[in-house]
Image 1 (cartoon, rainbow, N blue to C red):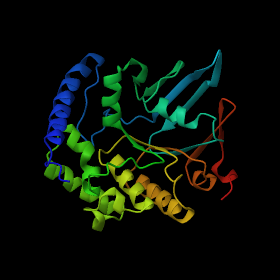
Image 2 (image 1 turned 180 degrees about the vertical axis):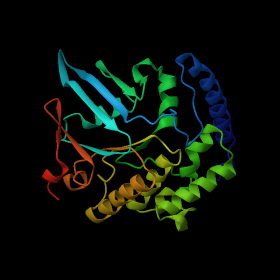
Image 3 (image 1 turned 135 degrees about the vertical axis):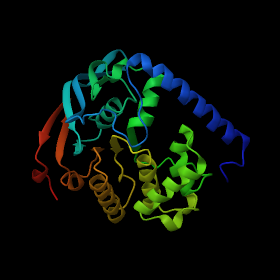
Image 4 (image 1 turned 60 degrees about the vertical axis):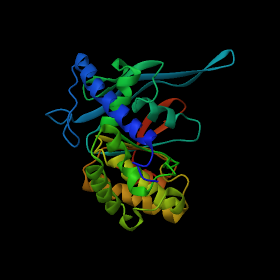
Length: 277
């Protein structure tokens, strides 16, 4: 299916572009001037790009409150690859959602450079995620009716980037993930590892300040998972990314710059070398 074959697709892109223009204007009251794709958000690079202070997350369970974590603080340094590990149900994904402005904490604050994410409205938070963050999930969430190159180009098209330019950048990222020859294939025609590589390219096409990955290899067999993680590590190095990765795979976490373990509502730093290979 071509991106221009349906009036609905054209309407979505037009509405998305107009909404983006209006959101640029509304962000002025926050003192936040959005910058071009690939440009630094702040003239002086921040040593600590993301920091959380005294986070608490409470869920209502029947008549009782379930405290997932509290008094949780952490920092993400610019340029580092940071892993968050822990058993299932400890709140790793919830923490990532809070750090990525997809959810809010019951208490505490999250700062991206000098921006308090709690100050953002729902619409402003969506704009912030689109501009500054790239997400990779355990499931690829590719749109099945579009090709690989169209899926990767979609974030730029939704910003109003011309199709030719967006697809040129998408081809570049397909090349980076080793799938240039699969550009015209739809998601159903790709293997699981190829789908995840396309999802990674889609997350990086906007040149995000932080790559956030939640179990990015969780649905893959061991050999394919290792190849995908090696790709993430290479792109992290080549493009000087800041990466925050939630993973059960301690062997992968061992290859990160730092590792935080979330356990019983507390986060502690552990040496990567102390983890099993």
